[in-house]
Length: 313
Image (cartoon, rainbow, N blue to C red; front, side, top):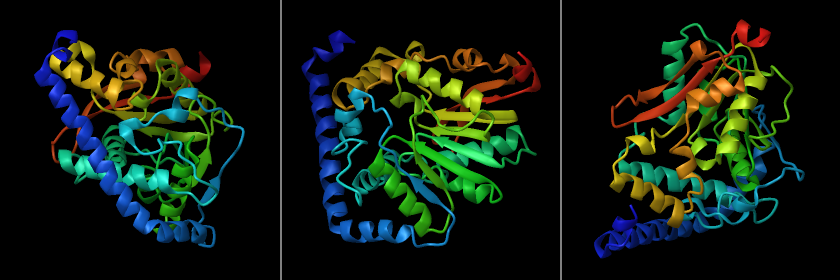
């Protein structure tokens, strides 16, 4: 990999990739700036809508130092950007940047990440009807809303550490009439009692976490689930051991030059082992690639059920 980075041709490719990202954000930022008055108005109106959702922000959440300056995918201001009590820019940038990137890759145009998990659940546990659902690392809330639609009798909660992301997520859900309760919380210390949920999910969150945070999320998933409850953590199927040197170099480009702080941690993660350490019975764990409906790609789904044996161990 080091040899590849020393070659002028590959370094030129990297420069083009970086420049492309910056150009994308410049275009998106201009569009969002023009829409800011409308977006702020949606946030201000969110609390007036009788939808049933809520927003719970706090000032006592411990933020990792690395995240206060990180610009994942070069997003302007980073995920924790917060320009005041009415600010929703981080969420708008996240949603539109992700949508544009996915469209360019031809990924997820027919089925969202959440919809993929919901389809997996219906195949894996056809009779499963969760009453309380938690989405960890919800970002702009696009992956939280489908659960409220798919399970209309369920109470849906979603957490993240970015205030600007959460304000946007709340305004988004309220504006389309879907009740979701958004909370400012860390995946490592989730302030709900033991056994609070029937379903715990995350979407593309693991590769944004250090190895210790990933394990803490698995541990919290186990603690928060009731007997018979299920967790499903979705992400990209990325494993260094299965990659060519060129693909490994691409992954490390994102970590070194594109703000993806923990790609190398994630590429060496053993989700099966992590869920076992958290307390799940190995026989109740199902970690595998699961294809999108249009077969354009597969997501890695790390799923586990909390069984009676787990509670007794």
